[in-house]
Amino acid sequence: MTFYGGKELREVYRLAQAGGYAFMANNIAEQNVLIGLLQGYDERKSDLVVQVSPGAAKFAGAGDKLAGLRSLSQQVKILGDRFSIGVFLNLDHFTTNEMDLIGIAISERLVSSIMIDASKEDYDENIRIVRKVVDMAKGSDILIEAELGKIKGVEDEIASLDAFYTDPDEAVEFMKKTGADLLAISVGTQHGVSKGKDVVLRTDIADKVHNRLVENGLDVPLVLHGTSGLLADQIHEIIRYGICKLNKDTRYQYEYARAAHDYYVSHTASIVPPKGVPDDADGLFSKSDWTPVKKDFDPRAVGRAIQERIKKVAMELIDQAGSASHSIVGGS
Ligand SMILES: [Zn+2]
Image 1 (cartoon, helix red, strand yellow):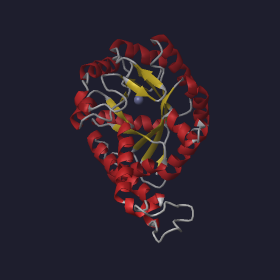
Image 2 (image 1 turned 180 degrees about the horizontal axis):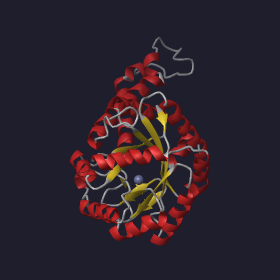
Image 3 (image 1 turned 120 degrees about the vertical axis):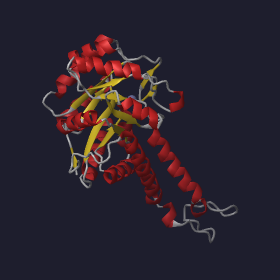
């Protein structure tokens, strides 16, 4: 129905924390994943948080991050309007390399929230950078997410070498000094292909961070990155500790690749000339009687397969997070 700003997003997270459920935050870089997500979330009557990394913006903008961000933001707004759910756009892992872009995203209201990731800096510098972005966003109706502690794994343009858990006492001071709206914490998850069975989730740390923040009147929504491999039980457990945004990128990348792979493998005979037939796409195979099947090689055919798959997976993940039927648009 609508592309919403920070005021509604804050309320969506508040209701999730109070209701004991969470939102998956779903990375996009192109429209097939976005359409699949919109369809799945609409069917489940859950509000939808999508997010764009600097790398995805660069890809979508043919090498120009700003062009990609403007383009994806418009797609989210225009396509989101077709569905009866709240739709939000977050910037994922933007860094000091993207300060100009952050400024434009704020002034042009391209997004609902922004993650400024200065977690690779030392503690004081992290505070200084986050504070600066919070000040930039003041009065803009855009929420700011910061990260304290380091999340292991290879991220877009960031490589954290060691797992580094969030310190509960630092978290309180960090939120007081930065004035950020959301806090991403490090409790053992990893970016990239990380199997849930191998993840030691430090729920004790999440519990301490959450309690310490609440004791200090800072009941902010907590965020967990690198959750693609987590098992349903792990998701259910972690939501109990104030986590209400769970980032999912790798899982959709895999599902996209798998849907495209399965589609093309099952349509090889429609697309690839059989042995002995000259491979002359120039002239559309004029040197033989063999003809490729247009309805099968039309990119919309594989696009639909990808959208269907993303929709199905999105609904499974909504059920894990518990956000179904809670949409602020006519929801309960
Ligand atoms: Zn992340």
